[in-house]
Image 1: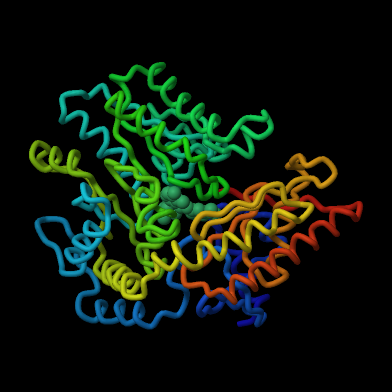
Image 2: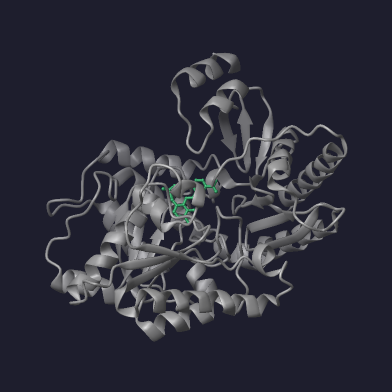
Amino acid sequence: MQTPDYQRLDRAHHLHPFTDFKALGEEGSRIIERAEGVYIHDAEGDRILDGMAGLWCVNLGYGREELVAAATEQLHRLPYYNNFFKTTHPPAVKLAEKLCALAPAHLNHVFFTGSGSEANDTVLRMVRRYWALKGKPEKQWVIGRENGYHGSTVAGMSLGGMAPMHGQGGPGVPKIAHVRQPYWFQEGRTAGQDPEAFGRECAAALEAKILELGEEAVAAFIAEPVQGAGGAIIPPASYWPAVKAVLEKYDILLVVDEVICGFGRLGEWFGSLHYGLEPDMMPIAKGLSSGYLPIGGVLVGDRVAETLIEEGGEFFHGFTYSGHPACAAVALRNLELMEAEGVVERVRDDVGPYLAERWTALADHPLVGEARSLGLIGALELVDPATGERFDSARGVGPLCRDLCFAGGLVMRSVGDTMIISPPLVISHAEIDELMEKARAALDATLARLATPTTPKQEESLP
Ligand code: PXG
């Protein structure tokens, strides 16, 4: 089959995630056929540098034979068995032990799921169950953040703060509230505020929300260490210490969503380690298996785990694929390879700083209002060169830049007018150089296109 054949069948039968079905049907999808290292190849024979590691997940890069072998061996030995009804299997047990060894010291248990969304559904039920067992069943409110992303199941989208998602297929889960995000460029800069004062103000907004709901009614706060899908938003240094202090003051559980930041993205095994956080729960997925097979989970801290174990009786929750043997075997091998190759240290000490140096240099481009990065996550804020302010989002400048990136052989994602990268952690210096050249060329092409009067409105998608 050729590209048009795939496109015809795709249009006829396939509803894509986070997609305007009609618009894509008219345009036709791009068919990705194979990949190796940090490159994907489409059916037209184009080689494209994957600046997003798939969807923030292919941390070890494509084509790792060791991961293929781990899956194959496990599929031969035991392709499926469950962890219900008092059974388990070696890959799930070994992976649980490994994860708890890597996680902050007080996280010693894991509940497996098939995805990050399922992990956050698990979080919601576990958090409320914990407080019920503690004799405080009225502690039910969970506070998330505007523009946070925690998945696409009903609980995931409710915990997340993506307004367009809340507007579809609701109502969501009751007793979930949202507070403002620590997005200085969008919300503090225009007000001329100092970033650190802005970070403290965002933490104060959390405290105000707790007092509004009543501290006796609030169960937990959930947040990503660095917001991923919301726009690679790195909070000011003042933010997390101030949030931590608020949660301790009111005895509210901290859930740190590590689905993107976990497994080396920020140059530590977990974002929580980078920010010195001691979460009660950490949802994980994506980089856990480098995306080779679907697996997620929730790492559970001692305080919650001991209560569930000692006082909880049966927890009526779980998925057919919780701790799936082949997925667990691949995840375990992935973590072993990351350790053996020093991938996390390399992000912290070598490629992370190298990327930061090259990436922040893009700030000299007339379209770029801010260039920020941490570890191997980066964002560019596009602004109108004439004013230094953001474009009217209806002009679709970010999506235009994304399309020009793709055409130039680079996957860079746009969240509105914020351009984002999150490349495989194994990316080399030379590949980072190539990424920078292609990003700059796409910025130049975007600028040139803006100078021509008829810029078609580009298709926008979330997250
Ligand atoms: N938490 C976080 C922080 C995420 O980023 C999820 C939970 C949900 O995971 P699953 O495995 O259920 O998708 C995510 C997922 C994007 C994009 O375009 C981001 C995600 C998923 C799809 C697209 O930025 N994040």
